[in-house]
Structure formats: structure tokens, C-alpha cells
Length: 254
Image (cartoon, rainbow, N blue to C red; front, side):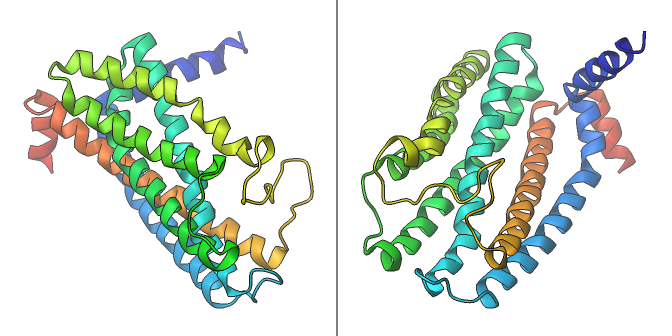
């Protein structure tokens, strides 16, 4: 009986999250909280990292771009994994909230990936003497940007909404194979990128003076972009549920 209660709670929460009405009405405080908390952390982490950490022993002042590049790169991968999970949920259970999540998150993932690529180029010029090389890490990250763009373009290219949703979900699932390639490319292939500085279960290879503001910025990026995704998802709900009685009632009460 006790073991059934957690499972029942998980099942109930899963079904509630799949309800556009329940999500829309309950998500607004989360948007505000994520925006405020995320922005505060980004301001603190960026000011700390860009203005107050000492130059790195080998990279000098160019190491400061780390505090923007690393959070953007990791967040881009996390967004795609979330989209792939949503694609699986949609294909299996036909949950329209999962489809709307893909629609909301794909453009944001594209912007974040472009930011990671741009800051990587800026970092690479003084560090490696070149802003771009066709190695496994940069090519697989570029492919990630194309995948995000493809999710948006594919939906617009297919006229029927049900077919477009299935095609986008399938592409999201197929494309997720690129994520481990990005993550392990520095270990599987010869690249200019250094091995990972933070490995679970091992002592970080990055000094605490850099690690702490980096961690602050990573958390800030995740919170702020999560707020952007939730806000975009609420906008998609308004677009898709336009004309429903519950939405008219909510608008009239607001």
C-alpha cells in the first residue's frame, strides 16, 4: 500500500502536467520566479567571472569567455535531451503538451547553440590561434544547431498538424544520438578542445576561483532559460487552445 502511494502521485502529476489548462494556470508564478532568480545569478556570476577572477595561467584573460560559453554549450545539449524526451512521450502517449514543448523549446535551443558556437569562436581565436576547426566537437555542435533549426523548419514545411507533430517528434528522437557524440568527442577523437574539467566522482580539474562563479552562471542560465521555455509554452497553449471555454474564462477573470 505504501509503495503504491508514490506511484499514484507520480501518475497523477504526469497526467496533470499533460493538461494545458492545469499547466497554463499554474506555471505563471514559475515563470516570474525563474526569470528573477536566473537573471540575478547570471548578473552575479558574469560580473564575478568577467570582472574579478584572475587571468588563467595559460589562457590569460581569454578564460573569461568560459563563464558564458560553457553554460551555453551545456544548456544547448540539455534542451535537446528535453525535446527528445518530449518526442518520445508524444509518440507513445500522443500527449499534446509534449508536442507543444518541442515547438516552444526548439527555437530557444537554436539561439543557445548559436551563442555557444559564437563564444567558442571568440574563445578560440586568442587561445588556439583559430576561431574554427572542423573537428568532432565543433562539427557535432554545429549539427546540433542544424537539428534545432530542422525541428522548426520541418514543422512549418508539413501542412497537416498531426503529421508535422509526428515527424518532428521522430526527428527529435533520431537526433538525440548526436548528444553523446558532442559530450565524448574530446575523448573519442583528436580535437583542439581540452578534456572535460569536471567529471562526476573525480576532483575537478578547474581551480575553485574559476569553478564557483562558473557554477553560479550555469545555474543562472538553466533557471533563466527554463523560464523562457515555460513562457513560450504558455504562449503555445494560448495559440492552440484559443476558443476553448476555460481559456475564455481565465481571460475574463484576468
